[in-house]
Length: 337
Ligand SMILES: Cc1cc2ncn([C@H]3O[C@H](COP(=O)(O)O)[C@@H](O)[C@H]3O)c2cc1C
Ligand SMILES: O=C(O)c1cccnc1
Image 1 (cartoon, helix red, strand yellow):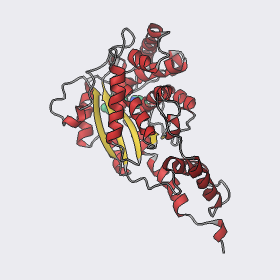
Image 2: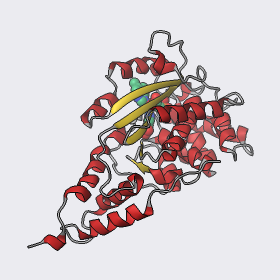
Image 3: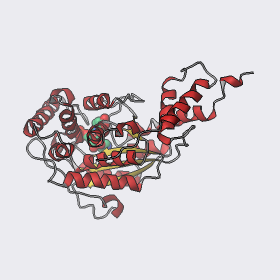
Image 4: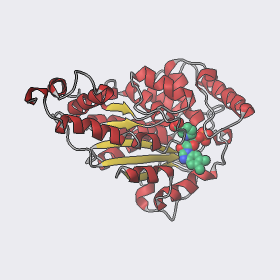
């Protein structure tokens, strides 16, 4: 069991009082005020600390259901090299807001012999089982991956904000299955087009997720069993990363569908962790919308992104900084001449 801390209610109340006194009509800065109070509660201070050190960790791994993607499995490993070269979508978008990107190989199907040891230090296995016909992980691997994700969060514990990203061809089918199993939804409601499958691809994907749900019915109540049956090493690690961040009182910006699936499982493992998260953006994948709704999170941005990697969440960073700035720098109504 985890003793999840609660964001500081006194700091939240003090923040709200200051927001109400700022030189503007009551509540006129809308969602920015909400985020400012949330940050104050998370940091336990008014104003919250500056959000200078923002870090993305891209959890990379291959999936047994990769044939359900519009792109080949080999892209996962190739993209690890792109992250390391600083040329991925999230590298470029993170640079815009001064965020750092780290890639962690939890389950990429390669030997990874020529990448820095820090990338593969937490590796659990190569690929995962094809969830429509077999379990994703061997017994014990879900917990090992969860602990690996916790260790990664500890390594990044100096961050002011953490962002989980993902890279893994086929992972949107896995996410749909995890979300469906977590919330008791049918495959047809949660499966999306991922990298852009056509109508027949969507049918095949839905059938595979339905088969995975039927195969594992009755044994996915326990979150670790759910990760073993339907998840992957990288999503289990992300769940651990999210739990450890909350234990260390580090605010998290969730990204797309992969974040949402990991977050649902993390919440089942450690209820209360969701209080430490904001949803950076709304993805186009239906399962992400279900996950966020179940977590009580309203996305900050809605740009129609469907990339993953942490790319949507990093774009919400300026909004968080703006929310902090109003509470730190605006004048008070009481001081009007
Ligand atoms: C070049 C490329 C870069 C990516 N970066 C993230 N994804 C995203 O797409 C994949 C999930 O979609 P699906 O389930 O349809 O495979 C994941 O790798 C996700 O991170 C990418 C996909 C591709 C092709
Ligand atoms: O919305 C996402 O997070 C997403 C969508 C498609 C592919 N990868 C990620």
